[in-house]
Length: 353
Image 1 (tube, rainbow, N blue to C red):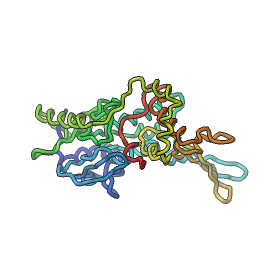
Image 2 (image 1 turned 30 degrees about the horizontal axis):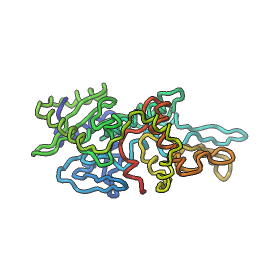
Image 3 (image 1 turned 135 degrees about the vertical axis):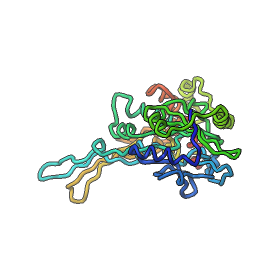
């Protein structure tokens, strides 16, 4: 473990950029923390924290001056690896033939460095790896973007009231799967990061920087940060036999009780870092000379998602809510060997009901 002074964070970011990576990280925009392209540490939301609760999200100023003092951004990293709208192929008519000229797998994929990934979000990326690249069928576009991504984790220093990552074994401290892991310590007249590498690329970057080893006092301070975040997690999910419980509760009246409040707006699925439902749309131009096929995010909460010739399979809000929850906590185990939930709490924050 090494130590990096906050004032020298740009040294780390510049070392990443020299390796050809575009920096993507948190920044303040429209009264929210969002993930977008950044140029350096000056773009980070210094001195801002967030308040998240049931149907509540707001930013407020913080006295700590921390660069990563928020809990979670309003969106997840999913959109950079699995974009909301993706061109699958384009065909152009040349004479009496159509030539397929573009497809997602042929596009140049930029190298992206994700700065400030939380432990639960890293777990979500790993779950989507299981969906898109670890199974029998490989999504070549996702695979290319994933292979060209460098992940810089920032371990959590606080928890929102909506967080339940500890229940799902995904946080608040990252254990593996990252290139670099930072822990921010701000207070007592000093502002620094402890840094650990988790890959050959991460080790190469740290070797270039030549950072000093962290002292026992600095290590202890960093451990105290993540311990405070863990102690602040008040929400939990009892996962003991959860797939079995949900399977036996298929006809429970509880689904109808929830459906009376649920708007089936699909907010929960769109902010969820692991949901991967999509639809495919075909389009042509007015002349009929060009045809395109696009993949777009969809949700199991939309009535058309389960449409089969003659009608939708899940016509009621109760059936659609049951599908979402039982897939996330139960049938995901059958498909991919784990829960599909990482406990980030976004579905609670962004539910208007």
